[in-house]
Image (cartoon, rainbow, N blue to C red):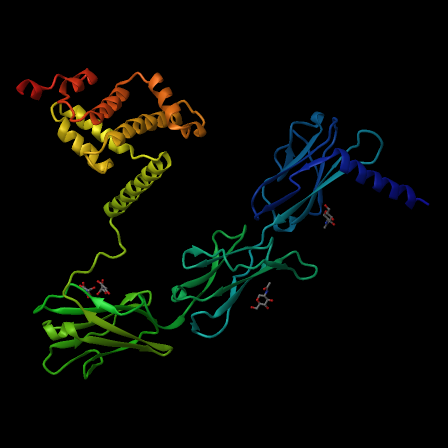
Length: 494
Ligand SMILES: *[C@@H]1O[C@H](CO)[C@@H](O)[C@H](O)[C@H]1NC(C)=O
Ligand SMILES: *[C@@H]1O[C@H](CO)[C@@H](O)[C@H](O)[C@H]1NC(C)=O
Ligand SMILES: *[C@@H]1O[C@H](CO)[C@@H](O)[C@H](O)[C@H]1NC(C)=O
Ligand SMILES: *[C@@H]1O[C@H](CO)[C@@H](O)[C@H](O)[C@H]1NC(C)=O
């Protein structure tokens, strides 16, 4: 019968804990010897503060700061019960709880947090397939295990110095029953590429209880057959007749390849020269990363050397590749590698082309070439005396013949006016485009009425000149039109 009230009391305590007592932090990871402050707070004044650390319950008094575990907080009157633990001990791993007097009633309120006293894990173990070498394209999987850390260690993967992010699996954390030590394991998988050869796969373990990361690593060896770097036949440019010729071919292979040159009937396996020493095959030169320069040296390049084809065969355990090499005395043609200047040039050319296309479309849309008019105008403008010549120049672009042009000239006049009207219609006044295609006479009238500037006079002048036959020496007229022009000097001379 006495058990029932006790149970009820426990239930009450849980409820009160949930509602009123605030404990921070709820969880902490510390190394042995670190310090820790735990603070419990209730929204009413208290007159006692107890903290259970490990198996011992400490009564904390604000004035007493001498012990290993001392009071922390703003004072009991503020409802604060905190503990400053100066040096964490291994055996304190587990719960820390504070016990406070209740606001009403007799049942104390309890708050609990979890302290993890960090314990360093064992060294990481990298488990990977035992074979010493792999082939390009092989799937590769490795597993890293970091046992018995508290809390679990953190694993990161590196390929040499570069962190691996692709192919990383979810980590799996396990622990022995009844132990709070955690073992973490993580897998990484990867399709091996030539670039992976010689790289170090590193599993790095980090942990709160370790001063620095610990690593487990293995070297990757990836084999692949000889590969060509460029497709098609190879041409060595820039050779000089009579000078030394070097035929370089760069290839990639692992393990190291053997090479064999065939020149006509001659077969050379380096390091070898032919009898008279005019052709020498050099040993493949390792450039690093599996790249090799394979070189054939011609002591003096003769005309027949340029005419024939040299065959190179490159072999290793995994395969072979054959190359045909030709020589040229010309400089290497400017290939795809463009200088900045060339790129700028191309961009400008494209822009000009675009503008040209736009102008053509514009001209087609409006039905007229509007350069013709303006060029004629410019011409009249620039040379006071030259109207006859100017006319010829002007008309050569637009009119079929000089002699039967009264109609055409008149037509041109109106077309020019119409065009300028259309341009105006399209431009700043933002009129509807439909208006720009109105019948010509109407637009022309409108345009003439509205126009006040020299442009229109020029158009009229142009038309009048063409209409008159033979055209008068129209220098005066030109002067009237272009009053802002300085009086033509040439005219005075005439
Ligand atoms: C520690 O506290 C948690 C609740 O916060 C409880 O579940 C756990 O049983 C406690 N552990 C010990 C050893 O008292
Ligand atoms: C990790 O790899 C090991 C063998 O290397 C395998 O047994 C295990 O199932 C793998 N785990 C995951 C999560 O892929
Ligand atoms: C061939 O390699 C040599 C160095 O071994 C270098 O000086 C030469 O420029 C290379 N020739 C060509 C055509 O790349
Ligand atoms: C290797 O050959 C390439 C041309 O294929 C050349 O540019 C380079 O200079 C050569 N390097 C050496 C070290 O010979």
